[in-house]
Structure formats: structure tokens, C-alpha cells
Amino acid sequence: MSKRKILVVDDNEDICLTIKQYLELYNYMVEIAHSGTEALKMISGDFDLIILDIMMEGIDGMELCGIIRDRVDCPIIFVSAKTLEEDKVQALSIGGDDYITKPFGLKELKARIDSHLRREERIRSNERYLLSSKNITIDLLANEVFCKGVKLHLTKKEYEIIKLLMLNKNVVFSKERIFERVWGLDSESQLETVTESIKNIRKKIRALDKETSYIKTLYGLGYKWDVTYEKR
Image 1 (cartoon, rainbow, N blue to C red):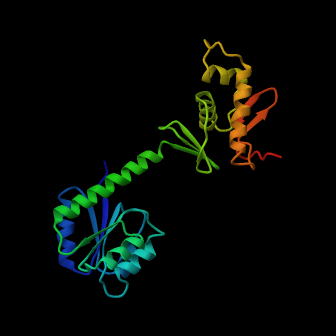
Image 2: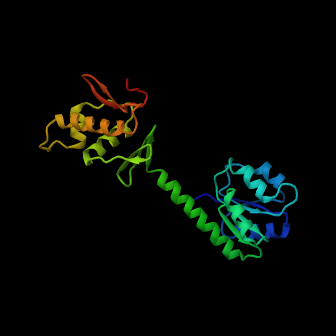
Image 3: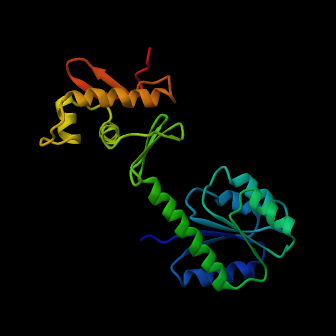
């Protein structure tokens, strides 16, 4: 696994160096900026986490967070000697993810860093199991389909049809092939159940999204998932 990259922004050089040396013992890659202006030149999507002091000359930590939050989505941990509740609330409301008051222990800082990075990894892992197409999203882990954020109440076969077509966008599946893949060759159901299931799927989607017919019929050939096909 590649080293996690952290940016420390603090005008106290001793604090920056102490944090850098400690985190590097645990295989983190640490870069340092001693002002908000210097940090702005370094900010990019490459950082996995940013540690940000509040009280700095020029661009302070609060202002810097507001500037960079649209550029980066990594966790931002504020470290500050300001202990008032309103300071903490403001820091978290403008895009900070955590707040540690100075003085703090390095073990605690590392524990907070580890916690945020684990959460980010879980979020990225979960996103790999979400499949989206325009207003339709499939949660492949939960076996659920959503249209405009609303869960569709589907039968198991209807879910399997949507999943099959969405995973193979623009691939045409004949009625026979869908039946084979979803019901199985040994099924006692009739081939026409495919037609009925697709009709039900369209009805359930149309109740929430009347603009697009996601499953396109190619007469004589079968069906395919095609969000460019507008229902007339």
C-alpha cells in the first residue's frame, strides 16, 4: 500500500517538525506549510488529510479551509489553542472534520488521523458497490434499486433484470437470453414473464421519472439499457 500523504499547516515550525517526525515513524508522507498563503500553493487532490492551525498571519486557518474545501474532499483536522465552543462550531461548519485543542498528544493526533482515513477508505469501498445511470442507482451489496433517491419495490427477478442490463449498458439481450440469465434454463416459468417483468419495471420507474425510458425495446431483437432514449 502506498504511503498516505498529509499536509501540516502551522506557523509554528517546531510543531510542524514534531508532527512530521512522529508521523513519518508510522510510514506517513508529510509535507509542511508555515502559512495559509504557502499552503494555497501546495493544495491539491493528492493529500489524504490536512492538519490545519487556525491562528496564522495573513490567511488564517478558517479562511483557508473555506477557500480549499471546494478543491479537496480529504479530511481536515483543525488544531488550535482556541478552546471556545463557538470556535469549534465555526471550524466544523465551514468544512472541518475534526478539532483538537492545543496542547495535544501526538498519540491522540495519530489516532484521529487513523480514524478519519479508515472512514474515508470505507466510503470509497462502499462507492465501488454503487452503480448509477442518470436517476437510477443500484446498491449491489444491499440488492436495492433507487430512482431519484427513492427505493423501488421490486421483485427479485425485476432486480436481477435491471442489474443485468445496467451492468451491460447498450448490450442487446434477447428475451430468451434474459430468461436464461435471470430465471435459468430449468425454470418452469414461461418466456412471457420476461415481457411482464420489464413492463412492471418500467411502470415503477415511470412513477418517479417520467422523462426517460431506461429500458429500450429493439423490436425483433430484445432489450437494452439506454438512458439516451427519451420516452415520447
